[in-house]
Length: 228
Image (cartoon, rainbow, N blue to C red; front, side):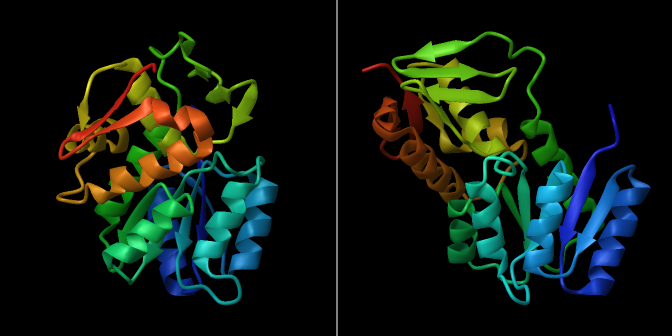
């Protein structure tokens, strides 16, 4: 596998250098940007495999950087992990709503960050077993090309949204608990943070438009996808 590139958008230069040093020890190539505008420009130019994005940045704030990148077809597929000193649930929810794939609260350990990075990168790649094209009502899912077409229009999804949709589609008609979706899609457990799933389901339904009605809520338990 070629060396994977991680872009660090962080205005605390000491922290950015420390994270860069530890990631390069693990075999990653790193890029750094110290404000939002530079981060957006670097992401568009270099197209990294993953972005570590600080929430509190000079100029363009992290939320706006994430929103900008996720709106562009060129950069929408790049997974984003937000780094922030703010740990309130509302911040996590807003981060997920603008397209972040994960959220790490400062101070964090190098080990925790590496685990999160590996989990996000793993789910952003198509699995070798995911080779068949899935068609449900007006939705076509092509795992190998990481593509979703809804009523003849391509839908741009983040890696996490794609994995979530694929997980539900592959288990058509079967109810998936929030805890199971966390395990299968995120690759590790957010203890008690099932709101993460709800937020991503809401975004996924919105992007699918009318086809979002294929995803059903099972009150008090989780979700399922079924043909109407």
